[in-house]
Image (spheres, rainbow, N blue to C red):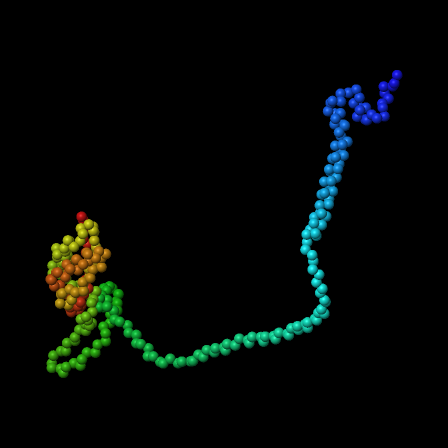
Length: 280
């Protein structure tokens, strides 16, 4: 009886492994075809590796074959003659700029000019106003009065048996000067109230708007030596009121009694404050 464990010499490893097994199962086919597939894979892999490794060499070979034939050119060497070095000439140094001209010092010549002698003006002290000259003060103690200007009386006439009379010396008054201080002030006929009534009666209120309220001004004019009035002015803030006040003063034709100094008529500046109320 033959030993079942002894295999024939012609049996392969796969047949021994799959003995008494189902060989129709896929594992048997895979193990049978594995050596052939492994060899095929090795050949293909080696071919791809060699192709990749030799591809640069193949590329260069193809490129050299496709390149045009090089033309050889015989070039004889020519002896190169060295050029002479260019020696740069040194640049001429520019002369330094001339120094700026020195400004001559200006010498200021001061001439001693002796001014021509000028006669000093004579300083005259004006006499005090007449009102001050005429002021007197009474009292127990004797006081020195205002000295009258020096007056040399004319020589006395030859005596005829009558006594010579001494003339009273009075200060001179001006015919053209306008005085503000006098011995006797100028007066309107009937007094200052009569003059105010004349002004209020002749004043034309229609020249005003009627809603100004209380309006004030100061009228100044000169009472001449013959009693007439000139140089009428008004210095209030309302120009219409000033104009009408001046017109009213001019319309009064009554003459004044002129102001007097030492009994002589003089020009006198009169001031009249004027206030009126205009209510709408």
